[in-house]
Image (cartoon, rainbow, N blue to C red; front, side, top):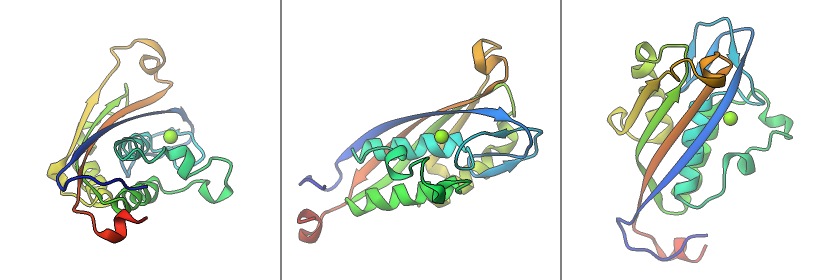
Length: 175
Ligand code: MG
């Protein structure tokens, strides 16, 4: 449901996701296949980075969450391309007259090292988001060897998305 708001209104949303490692590879993260002996286990392709961003975007628009849009009980979502899910979330908020302005993502993992994959991730994610790579920030952190991430059990991702309200038409308002 879209409410009346001035053009240029801003909203911020946060998203979090985690997936555990399971053999075999490759691993898909930020839309990029990364050579590995493990993958991120999940009903979809397990791309925790794309999932965290999806939830941040939906959260900013108060439009629910990824689990509501893509049930893990629906066989259609099995091994689903997470960039496709991200594009669907962007389309949902666009339909409510929001556009994505910026995304900031933190990937917390002992492995893989993010730096060498960062630019391709920014490219893939920005394409799905409909922004330029300069509007997508990605930071890789280890967990300093602590806890489940430190043991190398899996990956956690945290994302913040900023949306800007487009001018709404009367048709938007009557939706
Ligand atoms: Mg997930």
